Amino acid sequence: MKKLLSKIVSVGLIFCMTGAMAGCSKSEETTKATTAADTTAADTTAGDSSAADTTAAAEKFTVQEGKLIMATNAFFQPYEYYQGDKIVGIDAEIAEALAKKLGLELQIMDVEFDSIIAGVQNNKYDFGMAGMTVTDTRKKAVNFTTTYATGIQAIIVKEGSEIVDIDTLLGGNYKVGVQQGTTGDIYMSAEPDDGGVGESRIVRYSKGPDAVLALSTGKVDAVVIDNEPAKSFVAANEGLKILETPFTVEDYAMCVNKDNTVLLDKLNAALKELTDDGTIASIIEKYIPSNG
Ligand code: GLN
Image (tube, rainbow, N blue to C red; front, side, top):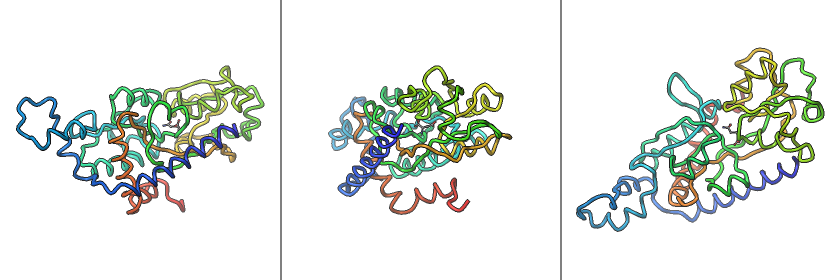
């Protein structure tokens, strides 16, 4: 577990550094790229837009012209969740601001967390943004942008549970509920020698709220999930609490298809501008007040 933790933290640091460097060396205009980029020259018959033709192929950097398609799993408050039938939250607002900078129309797709990376690899979505932690394994499949937020894995138990910390959780024969394919799943399903509880004690759910419901109804003894959603689950469900002993720190970033470095660079440049002008901090503050 410790090894895993330090790996994750160092990966995050490297990303921050490379992200910052990329940001510094790029003076490229990101805002006006889109209207020109959206002429799919290959598909048009007449060559009447000669100047655009030469660059269009190189500039086509989203799956659908004029759109920026984001994949998320919208049960992860305060990063993404439903307000009526609209998906709101930190990720949704940052994505909206990024799309605006790039002159694209944001479209958010709500899918299983576990299918986001594959969908990005297959060019079904332009990018994934779902409170997604940067990990070495995921980095083999997709590229990550600069990180924009930090998460901590938290343990939720019932009030009065015998589980009081990570050691009692690991040491007893307790069942642990996780959201399929998340870092909570990855850490907890590791064998005991590697800091987890092992496959036999893991119960996987496709959504965080389902894991929490299983805890409330006694199907599992604990849920391991990111701390901010954990707080909102506990607030919404009587009789649950978060243990004081969080056990990992993780970096969140957006994932992009490995071949689409054009989009990666544009997102990083736009993210840097939004970080520098305080937009990112104010979006995060709106959903996670620092004095609250
Ligand atoms: N941060 C966790 C991960 O990346 C969980 C993300 C989520 O459930 N949306 O695996």
